Length: 259
Image (cartoon, rainbow, N blue to C red; front, side, top):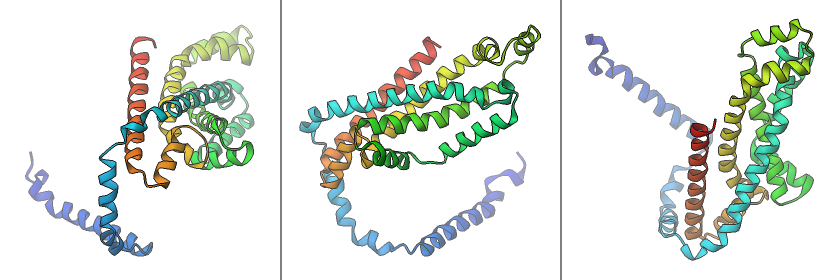
């Protein structure tokens, strides 16, 4: 190792970077007018929170079973609906299939627009349209999944082998036939993987959608926080972690043993 690559030679540079980060942190706090004294003055509230949070209210567990099931079903239904809609839309979003630049640009612009809308804002919009409940959560997750998975699918389509496409075109196959016989067989495994990934993401996201009325375990979490029931908050978060752990384990098993 050269002397200039040692920690001693890089120390001034690292200290300068650290100093710059600290200055940016302090500067950002000044710009947004952060009151650091409030953090110190309210330390007693942190003690109250931690004392309740570190003592989960286990007697509340039976009341969480149904909301947990609702959250899982909401995530599953929304993911399924979003993926089903994303597959044909992704095919229309690639010029390789459509051979039409205008159609491709329209669909890709639509995908980008959907991905710019945060989940909570989507949920708030659907609450205003269809009201409070699990249907709002399903629709929110479906739209979010549609935007995410369609982007991933058309990205995969553009990296496939052109050989089967050229072979099918040489015998006069239509655009639809090309999509079914030459493109789909090459991307189907990737699509299944994207669906599992989207489900994992949606299970996490659905836990907070209840804050705006989208149903599921998020409603219970919002209620517990509103009434400062920190023991219940702790238990709900433990259940959410357990749910995420189980879904991840199932997803990993499917990827390893099935796909």
